[in-house]
Image (cartoon, rainbow over all chains, first blue to last red; front, side, top):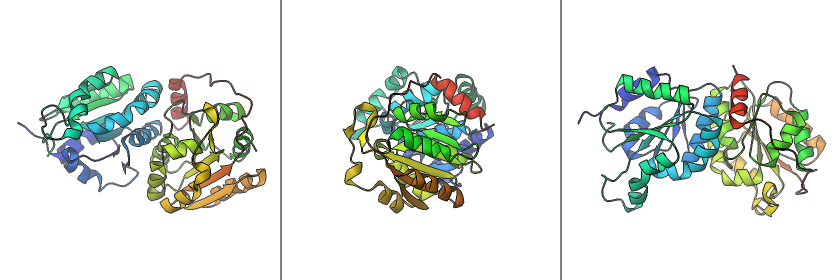
Length: 165
Length: 186
């Protein structure tokens, strides 16, 4: 498996113009969170709930930023109303990094249901997504950025355990 | 003072292109009826998130004055926003809370607001200045104070639970509201 270093991933994001980050941490995203925590609050806002993070990211977008939101897939549940009544109807894009405690991960009862239905849920809510399990290339990230700019809708990148080191 | 009158008094304090994020419900429609401007952003749904959006705008554009027009029900739903704003302390943010003690848009069911102190919570979270207002003069003074010192400011305005005359729905689509607001900052 070709894994990706968090610093390299963050550099790729920043090279593509992403300049505002907010979210709620997950251990799968720990290495990325450590880098973001060093940034100023004008660039990185550690939110207290995932739906508030979507609200903050929406404000940042309206103010001219290109936001990234990060969360565990358990947080998607909190976000559904924000997706439909904020991002979707106002057409507010954001790249949403979702750590994927999915069907392949064993042992956490509290994640079983959301893990089994994460992709189904995104499909129902018309959230475009792709799964990030080894590396993400520059052209792939460019495609995501183009989607955000053209469709003005969120794009979800599901990040599996160990993909980001 | 009812909600519509309080909104009108707050708007009387506008001195320039303040950016205003409105919580969902009757409040946005009433503000639209008072003084629609391109710098106004109206949430149609997303209860509890007006202050989140306001925080995102305020942090991204520190040179612009940002107001959040919120209600007590909305603040209670998104209490985490008070922690974020109090801790991150955006100097350019003023959080107005029109407190009628009820969910006015859905038929005046009681909120918890009369049983606790939203101002004390905001103060404990770290807002720079807390004010309470209930009259025309007090609102005018609160606006002046907010413009004089760095925020984040929290202004709790006690209003009656009387339902103002219904204002029509905002005629713009959500996408139009967002595009207009975004362009106002370019």
